[in-house]
Length: 88
Image (cartoon, rainbow, N blue to C red; front, side, top):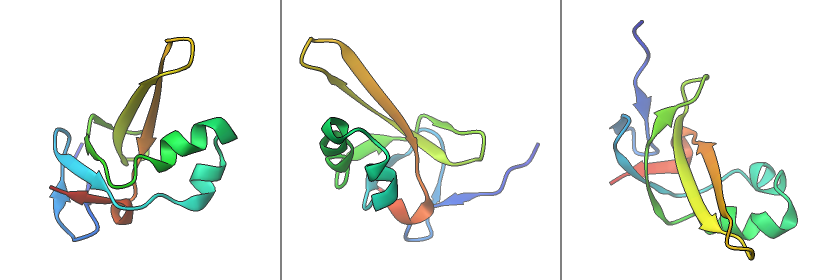
């Protein structure tokens, strides 16, 4: 199966394993999280992440990990639109 190329906000092709900087996130997406998690999602903007996979719709995915107040590991895997990422 041949898939279409995926591009970042500067029209650079990106593939699994590439490092991208999140340049923006959709405000509606951020609001979809519980209030105490929103700050963690918003803090992803400006940070660098490795593309770990493509989701079922073909969006490149990155993962954010942190420990909650009980020390439990928490993760969020998010798929990014082209305008939300820049390849570095």
